[in-house]
Length: 83
Image 1 (cartoon, helix red, strand yellow):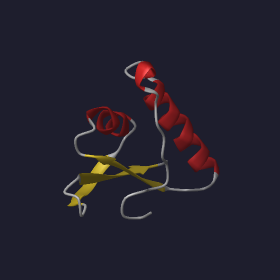
Image 2: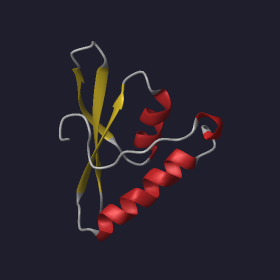
Image 3: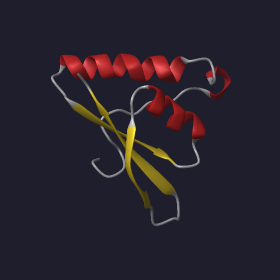
């Protein structure tokens, strides 16, 4: 999970994308992480997934690195610090 999964995973039905639901869902998830006492959250996404990347960045995600999976897919790893 530390390599590709992270602390939070979510998905938005295609017909509901680009309406702000992912950003809000991630924000609410971060609030729950804070209640649990977590200080730093790992979230990953495929490099080609522009929507996920923007959602993570909008919620304060800072990219740590990228890596290539066995099938050639590039995964980006982001950390979000919770105050």
